Length: 186
Ligand SMILES: Cc1cc2nc3c(=O)[nH]c(=O)nc-3n(C[C@H](O)[C@H](O)[C@H](O)COP(=O)(O)O)c2cc1C
Image 1 (tube, rainbow, N blue to C red):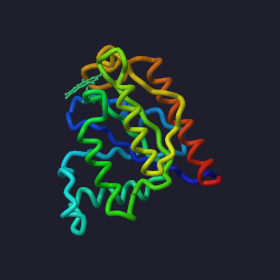
Image 2: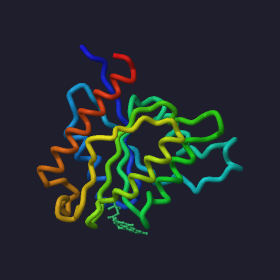
Image 3: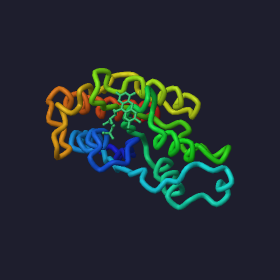
């Protein structure tokens, strides 16, 4: 039997009704059998401060440990002013530090975005992907999960109700598992 693959998912939004958190929940319902997805909430990660690097905040230590132990990452990003939200960049900056202890190093990843607008957060994904290059993360290029007009596809209970969106998320998770196994040499 295949070893279980663990994925750590996080969204660049703190709000309870976040559409991007809804994408992560949908992903957890659409996983291949041998996969476990843990969702990590970025709430409580303080603003990055280099002075604290030698006494990392507990929440940052927890985040770094969970990234390290995961086989792969799943990131759902909103778009703020044509980029990823500060909340997400801040969390990524923390977990990339201190110098020489980049928790993301070598991890396979998948990226999704949701926006009520007509471009679905695609520009935020592009900036996020640029940051992932520096962190030596290996993100999937395809399938692209860019959820446009997300208010019509996610209901007020935070459930992804659009079949095509669910299908794309399922495909993304399957591809991420294949990619993760490939990078591990399994
Ligand atoms: C400061 C700010 C800037 C935003 N800029 C954009 C933007 O550039 N493009 C976009 O599609 N939506 C933009 N939005 C709208 C967000 O996509 C929307 O609030 C979305 O629901 C946030 O994701 P969430 O539901 O996961 O919290 C912006 C929202 C905020 C608060």
